[in-house]
Image 1: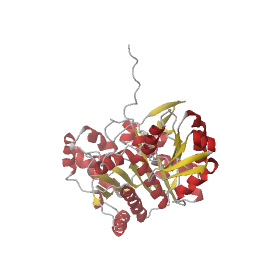
Image 2 (image 1 turned 90 degrees about the horizontal axis):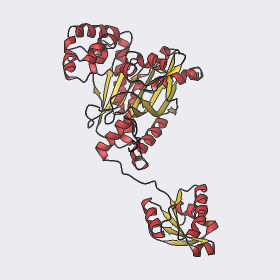
Image 3 (image 1 turned 135 degrees about the vertical axis):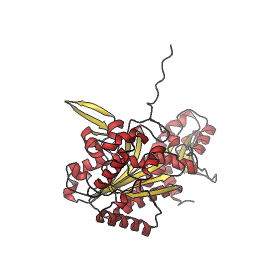
Image 4 (image 1 turned 90 degrees about the vertical axis):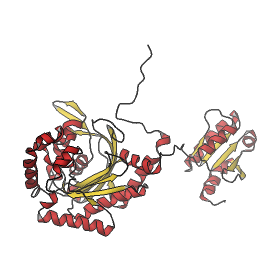
Length: 428
């Protein structure tokens, strides 16, 4: 009986070197822009005490109730693979007493998250987020800044066909009245709601508002909207967020049914959606969460942030720009040996080139010189260094420009400095 193949776990995927092009473009663009906007990088563990998410993400959310990977840790305790990034960042912020050093902090993170849900295209059980958290200010211009930052990342990676959706869900003063009125109306129409929405009536009724089920959408279409219930402070805040976006030239659409799926949101909520991704079209979600720091044991500090979904963004990039080109890792210099006797000299030179700050490689498979030159072209080498018996005997190397075909004979002990100057353009 043949041995069973070992395969990747369902809901995970490998990203091979040749497929890294779009990932790298997204990660580098995000880090560059996050830091340009004044956000410093933070890294937190991939698992946390389960209570952090029960308290922070919210016991009534689908994430906590259905999607967390939780592992017993002994003595009645448990740990959970992080399903999202915000609670971990706030936990680290408080644990490191950053609020006592300087309350206002702008932080960003990049990393894997884990949710047990039905895998589908762009929706994995291990997925990746790039997020920012601005802690310690209730300025509506900060809300606008985070939206502008997300839009800037998408523009930087070449996306065009996306839209920003915006809403305000009020605060603890004005939201309860709206929530109770929604609940009272929906209780009379329970039979028209899907099973998930019926269960949400008591534990998280506002989630019914953004249900994708067509019958549920027909039911909630007749309801009032949260923006009609905003208190004066929330209404003024929302006005200033929109004004900030208008002044920055950011187009957006107000969506009165947008509530987001996490319990901690207050006031501003937003999503960025791509037009070609179908039902799973959100590539970024965020908003304000002014009560979370206090909920996790810290002082009352307002916050706002977002998370970009890497996998969904990459699908959006593919939909607009085509599949990522599978490109072999490039090198500046490829060292070619003409016989086995030259291998040791090639190896020594490759290490010296790397020590000199240049990317360099050589053949380790015993290919012919002609085949090595083809590899150099495939690796997009700018220069080849040719070493054969004659070069070894004379203590020299031959340097070939792979663009225009010019060649130079250079003493071996000067080859690194020569190539550094060539790559700087000094000798061209």
